[in-house]
Amino acid sequence: MIDINSYTGKRYGFMKYNCWQHIVCVRRDAGIKTKMYTVASMASEIIASNFNEVRSGNEHGLTLVTNPQNYDIIIFVRSMAGTDFHHAGIYYNKYISHCCNAVGQVILEPLRNAIKNRRSIEFWR
Image (cartoon, rainbow, N blue to C red):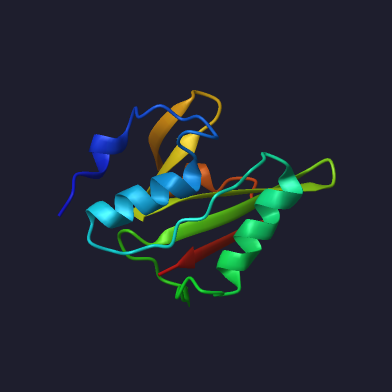
C-alpha cells in the first residue's frame, strides 16, 4: 500500500504534471494500470474531449461506480460563464488527491470540500 500523502506538495504544471498524469502515477504506484493520454493544449474543449473519452469507456477499461474505493478516479465538472471545466483526482478515504491550480501543487482535500459547486461528479474504477 502506498502513502497517499507522499504526493502532497508535488509541483503542478499543466504540461509537466497535470491531473491525469497524477492519476496514472498514483494508480501505478498502487499496482493499478491506467492508460495515459496526452493533452496538447489547455483549451477547455480539448480537455473536455479527453475526459469524455475516458467517461465513454473507450479503451480505458474503466467502470462507473457509485460507491468509491481507494484509488478510484473522480471526474468532476464545474461550469463557469457557460464553459465546462473538467478536473480529476484520486479518491482516498473520503479525501481527494489532486492537482490544485490555485497553489500550483498536489493537495489532499476532503471530498466534501473538493466537490462544492460542481455540476457533475463521477467515480470510475
